Length: 334
Image: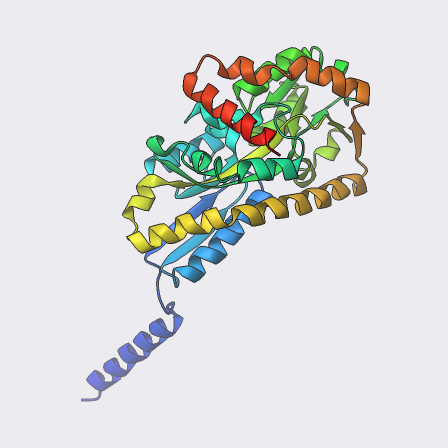
């Protein structure tokens, strides 16, 4: 006689426990944001996107961050964006050159004077909409563009002058501008995923690499070389990109939130990138590293060597040429 009430009590107790442990409201959608780095400006973009989207969506979108290529290689994550299996990804624009070659124009050397100049150029009201439209016909939606920092050069043997490039194999992000620049330096460009760089240096596949201070600090490149050679010739510019197939699954209000949150982050990211780069430079020095800055004579020679790279690598593609010329003309205003 008492078995049924007892069973009911057990079931009710179990149900109550399950309800107590269950989240108050499960998200309707999950947004995975991938990136190859960690604890840097790209990680910051993911963090701020998560905060903004989850708050504005009232928890209807749950955002999860996946640093250090946890979702796959850079190439596979970009492919995932196009297929809709990766909802968002942020990386240097260079890696999207295979999607649309206009993404490669941001790595044209001597295009930007400094980070503040790059900010004015990239956020110019007449330029920014064109940038955010890149790749739209290839299933990707750019929602943010922001500076990472100037790239510096590191080699196992150390680099202290322009002639030290000669005969070396240096890792690049695979754009035509980077390959042309390395040819002018007398070096060979070797496209390579970030995860392969340290093994490549250790195994002698490459002699050196170009990257930003944050990457050298966070991945402990100081264990390979203490010297970063500064030419301040190439700005690393990153993009925050969302999958258009995934966006198409969202209700209109949530789709608008995702896009707007990315766009409104742009000025904040520009400012933060300068702050973080200064901090990373200090950390490199504190770890025993040093910066070797090119002499004025080398800077003059540098511009003679690579000043024509932009025109050289864009002239054969009318769309790329027009985009580069507009980008350069926009920069000339500031």
